[in-house]
Image (cartoon, rainbow, N blue to C red; front, top):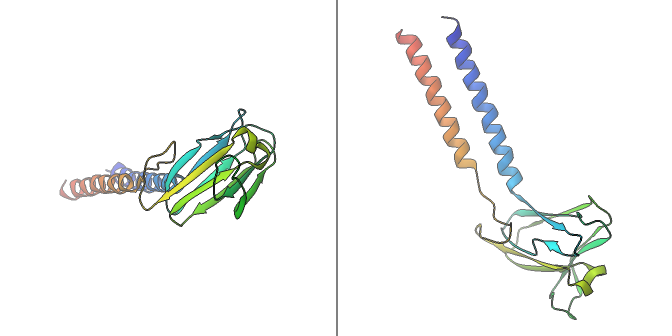
Length: 163
C-alpha cells in the first residue's frame, strides 16, 4: 500500500514539529515577566528564579517608570547602586536582564519611591517558588513525545515489512 510511507513521513514531520514547539516553550520559560500596574506597583513584587533566568519588566500601567537596583528597598534607604537602572518611559516599553549570580536583587521605581513601588528578585541555584517566578522545564515531555512517535514509526515500518 502507498499510504503507509506517507503516514510514516507524516508522523516523522509531526514529531519534529512537536519537538520544536516544546523546545521553544522551554526557551520562553527562561523569561519571567514583571509588570508595572496602574496602582504604582510591580507585579509580582517578589519573584524567585533559577540562576540564568531572564526577567522582563513590562510597563503595563502607562506613565514613566524605572527599574533601579538598590542595596535596600526600605523606605528612606533606597539609593541606586549601579547594578542596573532602566527606563520604562511609556506603556509597552520593556527591559530585560539575565540573572546569573545567586543572591537577592532589590529594586525600585525612582519617580514612585514614595508610593512604595519596589520589588525583589531572588536568584537560587534551583527552581523555587515565588509569586509567578517558578518555571517548569518541559524538555522531558519533549523527549517522551519524540520517543513515543518514533516507537509508532518503528511499529508501522515493522508491520509493513512483515505484511
